Image 1 (spheres, rainbow, N blue to C red):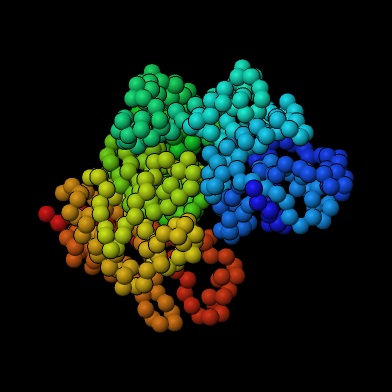
Image 2 (image 1 turned 90 degrees about the horizontal axis):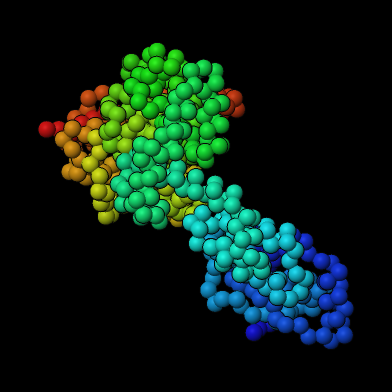
Length: 498
């Protein structure tokens, strides 16, 4: 037990077990304090990563809100408190929030203003919703909130059903991307048999695929995809993959007359070495610094791979490449520095594995791809944005010019040692230059590095940025300063020298 300053404490509304606080209770406690009443110590804990605290650890009230407020009413500077645990808890963790909410409910069923049935129900649903791995059983929740297991089961049945569907869709997605059965089972925390049942030819996903393929009205396809995403708790790229099952690449793109007459992706492969797309296709990939059009990825896959091939994305970022691989029936191993930086990111993008391409100790993952699609940071153009996503880890966008180029030299050489003789590398890059110093890194610098490390260039494709990326103020500023904005971007296609 210790004395803590009232002003040093915070109260977390989100993990409090009651919907409402009681001003009447605060007044009663304040009146009791004024005549010398003694109250039990409040329960507190230390929380890291609390919103709005800029990394500062806070002391949060777990039990004793009304006592805390009563001390403030009486202008008492300190309050007796006990720490619930000696550990500093990570507030960004959903598991921690579940424990905090449950503990608050447990305290409030024992003393003070009791929780209502509505409070108990909302607490149970909060815990279930933030516990997709089902580490909390119905009985464990019931014990904390003060209810029966059957009641808890009824309260959270819809959440558990949705989580099962979401888990199954993740399992199916990973299977389509080429993950092994045992790796999926380990990731999802289920048995190999369950993985087989989810991914088998008579699974629910096979039935969903049949329903999506049955639509022959092009005008209704997009709405059907949206309905499937909502109803079956699958993501949009997976819905498109199910819709396009069994079709040729050309049919998937939508230029040829497909068997059902629909236009499908509506990308239409451009059969020349100039690929221009007005904007990103938001069906594929997350909002991310330096996000690229899925159409570029699709064109590379169309011209330089076959269905069933394994594609590698060394810096997957927002996940455009694995999404397009799903739609075009390619397997994919995706890696990124920021993968797993948070529970939310790991939940959103389970197929992106954490990998750090360290200039001082660069290693290669266990993968021999048929195609590598690489869209690395274009030197320092998005340095601030990438630094925020990297969460303290060093991104290559923060390297100086010499180290940046040295990184690519080392990476190209390392890749050459670990890939197949037939592997194709598609390298997406833009020029960079500093008008103040006339220093630059140009596409031919990367081309020279490829050639020097044993790669043979076979194609140079222009894939310019859209003029929509430059706002009106930006254009005016560049005109007045007599500077040129940069729209050029290239895809270098290379294969290892024999």
